[in-house]
Length: 143
Image 1: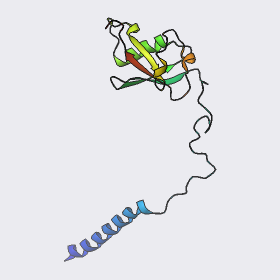
Image 2 (image 1 turned 120 degrees about the vertical axis):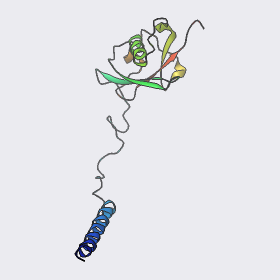
Image 3 (image 1 turned 60 degrees about the vertical axis):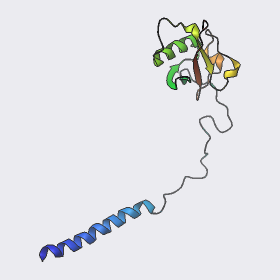
Image 4 (image 1 turned 60 degrees about the horizontal axis):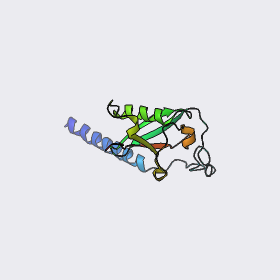
């Protein structure tokens, strides 16, 4: 008889604890963010365009044909040839029998403008501090 009298209060207590924990997720909301804080302003402000202000910039290089992406830290004075070589190494495309001349780099949102010259510096190719992406394509000359 003694064990039954302890079982009922224990069961009621555990049910109460479970009920309290379940309502913890539906309790009152915490204080919302103040309305004076600008949303979506980004690093440069809402209407300011991105520009180059840093000496080292992280860029994304994508090989759309393979779905591969890599991030590289570059300097504005670095050439497209250097970025192409580093990108090929990151993608494991650095085989000796395929020269760099068979690879082309385009700006991701302006591929119609054509490939960048290999000796062009990144700062002359529209490099900005944020969201700069290049696409790497294999375009052999003798095919």
